[in-house]
Amino acid sequence: SQQGEEDPQALSIQEGENATMNCSYKTSINNLQWYRQNSGRGLVHLILIRSNEREKHSGRLRVTLDTSKKSSSLLITASRAADTASYFCAMALENQGGKLIFGQGTELSVKP
Amino acid sequence: KAGVTQTPRYLIKTRGQQVTLSCSPISGHRSVSWYQQTPGQGLQFLFEYFSETQRNKGNFPGRFSGRQFSNSRSEMNVSTLELGDSALYLCASSSLRTGGLSNEQFFGPGTRLTVL
Image 1: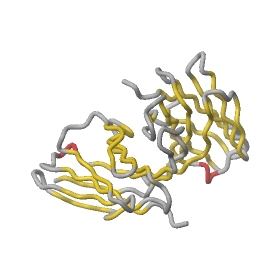
Image 2: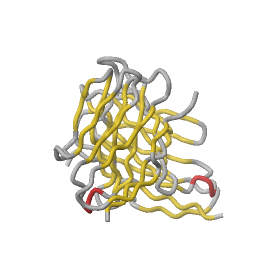
Image 3: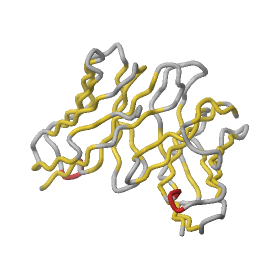
């Protein structure tokens, strides 16, 4: 399967703690993106990291990419109850246009 | 700018029927992709259209088809519905340029299809 793998599948933390989600993939990528989904609704784009980048920040989000290990991680710092959602990594493959290959997702629960 | 819109939001059909779902991308976006989301298989790519041409196709049977109009609006059609077609169908648009890098995609709220 071309799908990415994410771990953990589920993560439960307290407000204020940090949450780390990991993603691994199998093929060469053009870029890797992270999305958030609330309760079976549409996905919201969080951050995009290109294959020649190693780290990227956006507010409380930090994404790393290690192309030699074909892996990425998403760190959410100082989590809030509103961060409760499913998080997906999505790989944009080389020469595949707009096609994204999604991981299975991590379900994050942040308890107040 | 208005976001990606999808109609209808909910749909109930019976086995053997066909269904057409519609997607209006963000103004100026020429790439439209469709995804199927189920609890068992997760998010799976169906197809992508760019300037009325299908650029990519996922591993779905021929019962799944789509098209894109000159105004970039897109439709997908599923014929001879099966119970397993019950899913959330998501449409996404992007400002992807021809041959360019895959930019972030903007997703619509989805159409929840239930096949009875």
